[in-house]
Image 1 (cartoon, rainbow, N blue to C red):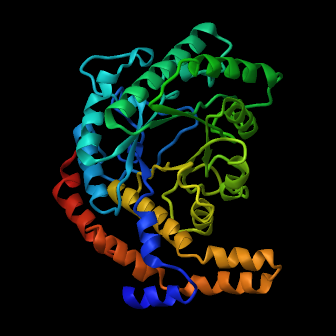
Image 2 (cartoon, rainbow, N blue to C red):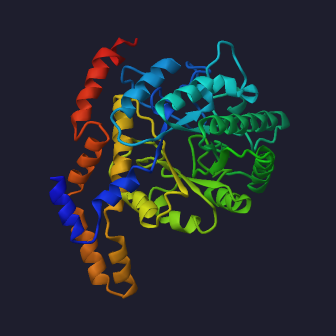
Image 3 (cartoon, rainbow, N blue to C red):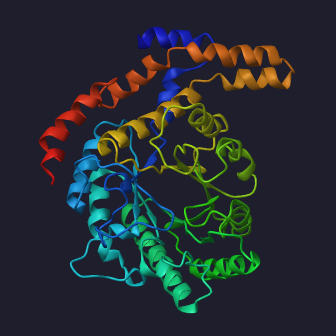
Length: 410
């Protein structure tokens, strides 16, 4: 089937072998928080809050770092390619309580060593939520000097840790700052909170971290901040462009009809790199498992068609506790990789040539014909070569793991 697919793609000048080689070099940053419903290990029984919510009660949630790493290893065995782990600060490992403004690299050394053993890159995030000092709804933008100082110091500590992570792994860590700050109802002053946020970020980012890449992430609204969010897209786009740092675009952090695929080419004209949080919002920022939707294909196509995979960091961000959590990882990452492959198998040069000549008939005709080309045969070949299950066979392995491991967890 692959040989036939290769011949069919060749009729349009597409080299499937070159496509598979490019795909093998594109990592996806796999978010740890799908495995335990964003619980972390600082206070696993605590409440999320800050506009975050995980629904469902599927059995088998990871309760310890070792269980979470075991689940990740199983997911990685079902996913072709070499990838990365995305870790939040609340996933520290410590026998005694450590406040977030005092965390150090040693609290994450277990994760660093594990990533090294798994040949994974590592990304990091300050956790500015699920904490008493986030209960007001304001962190880096808080008018309270003490609250603001706590979160500034937390973010500064995270950058130091991330720099150590990148140095130890020989691969730069992307550290993404997201805050839940906002108001439930109409504010009297939109300017002051943003001035405070800018000043806080300026202090956080003041020290150089050569093995770390700084990213900032916007949001449209949250539960409890429906009327106003301090860190809007406009705020962070301007800030990232001014500071020349990484801008994070989250697929669920915009109006439901507003697509981040449309923003990629524009933003890359003004910022050096992008971080994508690939998610699937359903009517709101609900972070559903990524499916092979039109928007996912549009996002991945923008990356590979413009050959900016070296400037775009792909991370996933969803949390679904209503289904098997290992399966959620496998579905989401495999779909993201398939989306990339669909883009890589497009006759982009031919389409662009037709567009430049004003031949929109050829452009549309080829775009539509490509939809029935045998992407599945090429994807199966990639999985086979990377020694992971082909087709839905991966689900049998998940069911076996659920029976032998996950079902034993109380």
